[in-house]
Length: 265
Ligand code: KIV
Ligand code: NA
Image 1 (cartoon, rainbow, N blue to C red):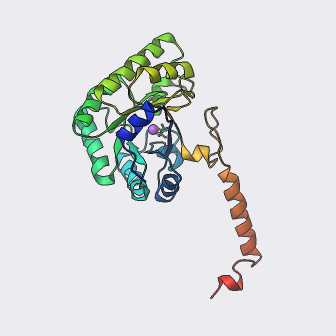
Image 2: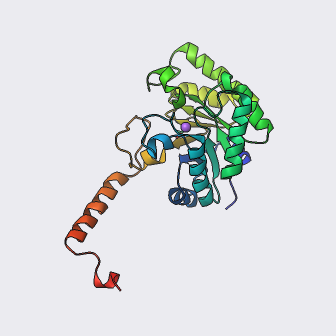
Image 3: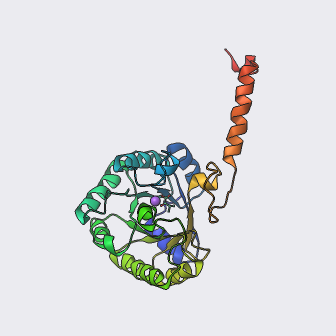
C-alpha cells in the first residue's frame, strides 16, 4: 500500500475521512498495527508510563525515545511514524529543539516529531519545520506540564484557557505544523478548533468532531487496567487473555503436560 504522508493526512481532512492513530513503542506491535491499516503510529513519550513504569512522562530520555522509534520504524511499511520529543529536549531553546528533532529523524528514521505546547515553543516549531522536518503540535492536557496543572482533569473548560487554546492552535498552524493533537478538552471546543484550522486535528478525549482519533495502544487493548479515564474505549481485554494463557502454561509445566512427544525431538 502507498505510504501515508503529511500530505495524505491533509487530503483526508479535505475529504472528511477520519484519521486513525495509535501509539506503539516496539517492533512486534508496530508490525501488527501497520498491517491492520493504522494511518499514524505515534512513538509517544507515554512509553515512560507504559514501557518503563514511570508515574509521568517526564523521566524518559531522548536516547530512550530514539531506541523505541528505531524499533517501530523497522516494522512500518505504510503508516506515518511520528515521534514525541521528550521533556527537556526542546523547551530550552530553538537550537536545542532542532538538534533533538534532527537526532530523531537521523538516528531512528522517523517521519515527523511532536512537541507539546503553544506560544512558548513557536520558535522551536518554526526552526524544526524550516529544517524540513514535519512537526505535529499538541495542546490541551499536555502531560509534560502535569506538575504545572497539578491535576489530570479536563483542560480549557474556562473561557480564558479556551481562548488561549484557540490562539495557540492558530499560531501552531501558522508556524507550519502539519497536524495538531487535542488532548482532554471539551468536545465543543475541539469541534470549533477543528473547523477553524486547515491542518487536521487528532483528538484524545476531545470528542468525535476532530479530524482523527488517537489512543494509547496498551489502554485500548486492555493491557493496562489501572488507567480508566472515560475517553479510553477497551477494544480488547488482553491483560485477562495473557493471564489465562500464562496460568495455563504454568499448570501444564507443573503437570508435565507440556511439552508433548510431538513438541519434543
Ligand atoms: O505520548 C502519547 O501517547 C501521546 C498521545 C496520547 C497523544 O502523546
Ligand atoms: Na506524548
